Length: 240
Image 1 (cartoon, rainbow, N blue to C red):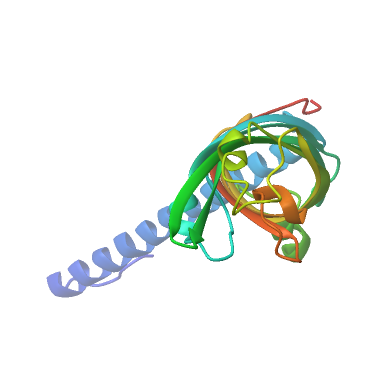
Image 2: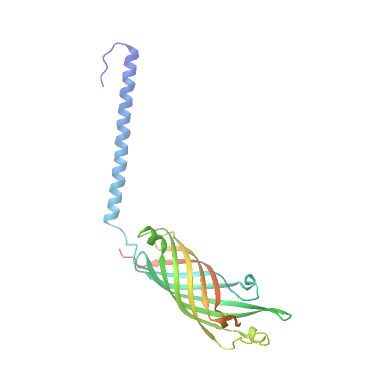
C-alpha cells in the first residue's frame, strides 16, 4: 500500500494500516500451515496405523466383595471377599466372549427359634460369558477409551466346606454335607478404561442366579448372589 501525502499524520496512519495488513497476512499463513500439518498427520496415521483395534485377546484379574441374599437375614452381614480370573477375546468392536472363574469365600446366616448364627462355606463358579460393548454399539464406533459392557452368561457353580451349616441341622435340614452343584446364570455390567494400548482398569457388578439350596435353605425360589469387583486386564494379539 502506497501513501501519497506530505502530511505527517497521514503518513503515520498509512504506515500503521500497512503494518496491520502485513500482520494479518502472517497470521493467516501460520493458521493455514498449522491446519495443513494437522490434516497431513491425520492422513498419515490413517494410511499406516500401528495396529488394528480389533480383534484382540485379554487376560484379567479382579477382586472385591460378594454377598448372597438370604431370607430372614441381613444381606449386609453376609459380605465376604471374592476374586476372579478371566480369559477372553473380542472379535469385533461390538461382541466378545470370556471364560470367567470366580470364588472362593461365602457365608450364610440364620435368625429364628431363639438362635442367631452365621456359617461359612466355599464356592467356585466357572462361567462362559458374552460381552456386548454398548458404547461402540450405540455410538457406532470402532474404538473408545471408556467402555460399558453388558454381560450375560451361563456356567457351573460348586459349593463345598459346608460343615458349619451341617452342625445346625435342627434348623437347617437342607444343609448339604458334600459338594453342591448348581447352574449359574449371570447378568451384569462392566465399565473399563483403556489407560494404555495393552492395559485397562475395570469395575464390574454381577447378579448370579443359583439353585435354591446354595445357601443351605429352601425358599422355593432360586438363590441370588451379588458380586462387585475392581480389576485390571492385559490386552494382546492386536494385528499390526
